[in-house]
Amino acid sequence: MSFLDKLKERYATKAMNGEIVPQEKIDNILEAIRLAPTSSGLQPFEVFVVTNNDTKTSIKEIAWNQSQVTDCSHLLVFAAWDNYTEDRINYMFDLTNEIRGFKNEGWENYRQMLLDGYPKRAPETNFEHAARQTYIAFMAAIVQATYEGLDSTPMEGFDPDALDKILGLREKGLRSTLLLPIGYKDANKDWLVNLAKVRKPMEKLVTFI
Image 1 (cartoon, rainbow, N blue to C red):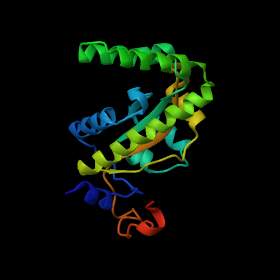
Image 2: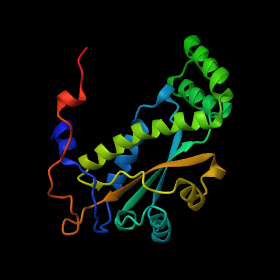
Image 3: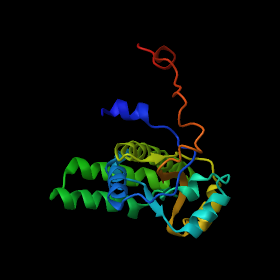
Image 4: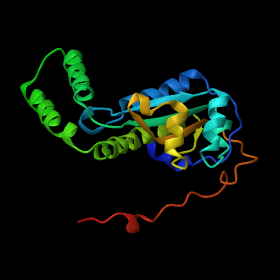
């Protein structure tokens, strides 16, 4: 199936059956996340894969008691950097030089431009910028899950401060942004499973200039 076919097929699953997803499929989703584009290639986030039932139960309590949190196979938690620091920026630039096997003057000048700018900005400004990058990787995960024959539920409906405490994210310099339960739908309990996908008509969405 084409990419567009997959987008037409997927939907936000409202009930899951608890069946365990093979690790290979999860690994492919994580690789899609790793390969997703981010601003300046900094990948300013981390992903936590939650399978522990007690932890999932705790998260469900601060996520509007959405059943997918506990009934999914794997719960992905996206957490953005709380700030841009010199160490975090330098790590990615050093990694680039190591993998490519050379230094480039233009690339080093770009590094310095980021070092001169990002760490001096307000932490909240930097967090909001980093948080937006998680949405790009989030979409990659959603689509790859569909290619793997899996169901998923994009979620912003949770208490991020409470989730940060459950997973100890603030101590890691991270703040939660998104949840993605992954698993298999329970068609008998999913009220959305047979309903048509609704999107704006193209003329209401796109303007050609």
